[in-house]
Image 1 (tube, rainbow, N blue to C red):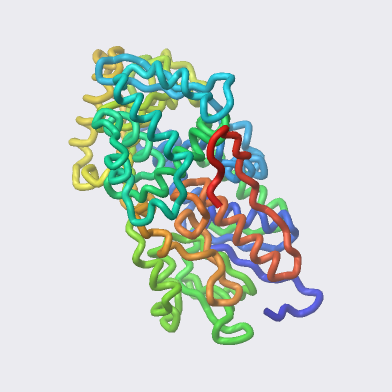
Image 2 (cartoon, rainbow, N blue to C red):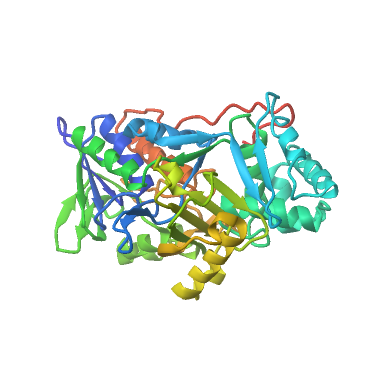
Length: 472
């Protein structure tokens, strides 16, 4: 792409979710003038906050966490100046239906043995379940991706002889939480990645980071960082199309907004969902095999419920609920360091929540309250003073077998047009880490096109497991 000598390239990033924010922040740090456009009035995309009418306070659309292995997301928070707003824990709590508390935590042992002592003490698994799980985890260290072609996670688990209890209480809860998909639908290769990289590869990979502030307080500072480095961030601007001109019909020329404005651009990062991308493309590109495949990605929903109780409910700051329709409970009052004498704000998460989408608010709140009261005795006499229900019908792509063939690389057939989002090829499932990786990779490609190659992506944690090695 020919850019006149002595002029700066014009870069437009569409979408201020994590992918777009990551791309914009990385590029302005390299001295490029970036215009970041977002159709909504706030940044963060699906990982954002809103003001609840019920309580007039900032409420996250759903709880988002990160793990120790999310190296690029941690780097992004450092760049944005908000790394100190993440609280890390090495203890993951589980509450079973009998009310028994179990804790998964690391021991001073090399990977993959660091979690083994606490795993043996998990009270919701039988001895037979634990033996099957240990055998399965060891096998995961020795299997390669090509051995898993077209298999679902459940097919592999059953072929491996996993017990029903192990599948229901261990494999399924972790996979549904990590991949937002059921074991009978998700690819075995993605399931393996969750356990290999999240639990077996490095002693710190499993550690859980929980935001200590509403999500908007993580991403508004990023907007200020972009602006402080010479970028422009424009909210409430809806992009309706991409223009192709520049040096030829296969070269990006700019973007068009809903109010008729045309922004010329030498480079565009489309950090938008796959289904939105198709609506931005010129008619001549919509049938192109590269872009047509994007429209075939299936999606999976997530639902969240916020409950405000009139008294303290639990000293735990989180808990995975075993054998319950609600998967996780997060104590937002404790996360934010607030006194709980006036009440407790709990955030509930239900992943792969297809069964919840047709349900009304009243039915969902009835289920949520029932499950919280069953899990936490202190809630049984408490009164719910406020509540909110959030449904993300298209929260993530569905990690089905064969989905990688539908995930495009960030570089497109159109010169100067790059894609970002957790749905493009990142080597990761649909996660915040994957979104940031895609934004960083798009920034790297733009810098390379300008003759200024620069490594922005942060390496994974080193493989420390005594067995196996990282998939290439």
